[in-house]
Structures are given as structure tokens and as C-alpha cells.
Length: 217
Image (cartoon, rainbow, N blue to C red; front, side, top):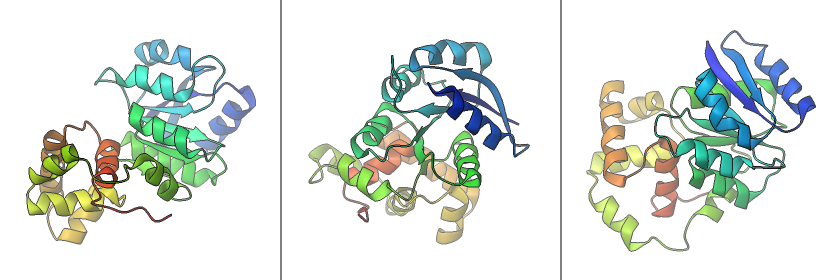
């Protein structure tokens, strides 16, 4: 079972999301928060595997709550859920350390898939807004810093990073490059270390920032 901390300032929304998660045996909502300022303490007490975070809340929004939580490298991954296709806010959530984002109006099975994917250490970017969000995130041109970081990667690591940037899972990368899952994990670890990112979402954003992958808007 994947332990979920549900964060949303609207009780009816939390109830709806809870019902969606109860449709599968994979997810267990172990706690709920009514605002972003409750998240750090709730994670400390309940030890969830993933935090499902609303982006707009009254006291502390999802961006700031994510930033506070992710200041601890041992914290669980965060999936941002929002009814707003606000490119700037979603970009800010990625910069704060969120592992991905999903619009709330998606079908229930897609929300479940997003949560389980993030809990398993992958990134999840809602395809409905990914191009625009990453276009907003991306610099107008590759920076000197990103260019230098790319020069540290081997040709195979660049191949892997391109596929990460396109949203491929480790298994899909292994199949696409005809290598083992173990080899993919090794490449991913080296990429994280060389680029100075701590998770898959950071690597995806780097791939766009550097111009290695171009968003489809």
C-alpha cells in the first residue's frame, strides 16, 4: 500500500479525492491537511510515501509548502493537484521540488496513476499543460551553466536524459535503448549527480532548460 498525505483547503475536494483513491487497493490516505502550513508536521507524524498537494490554499500555498517540505532530502515526493492550468504556478511548483503535477479534472484512474507513478520515484507531468508549463519554465536560451553541465555527460547519458525529458519511465528507457533496467538506473544516478539535481522532475526541467528537449506548445 502507498501511504498518501492529502493536502487541500476544501473539505469537499478532499472527500472527492479520497473516494477516488479508495477505488484502488494501492493507495491508503493516512492523513489529511487543510492548509500548507500543516504539511511538514503531518509528514513527520504520519510518514507518507507521497504527498498530494493542492496548489492554491489560504495560508500557505502548495508552492511554499512544497519548498519547505523538500528542504529535507528525506521527505516524500510531492504531486501537485490543481484545477487551475496556471503555467507560472505549476512552473514554480517544479522549481520548489515537486515531482510533478496533475489537473484535478482528469479521470480518476489518471489521478491514481499519477500518484502511484510519483510514489515510485518517477515524475508525472499532466500532458494537457506540460508543453506550456515547461515553455514558461525554460530560459529563452541555454545558459552557460547548463551547457557546461551537459558537457559532463557521456553520449549514452545524454540519450537517457532526452528520454527522461520526454517523460519516459526507466522501463521505457531500457526498452528504447535496448539496455537493462539496472543499467538505466545507473545512468540516471550518474545524471542526477553530474547535473546537481536530486530527482527526476529536476532532470526533466534541466533537459528543457538546456535545450536538449523542446516542448510542444
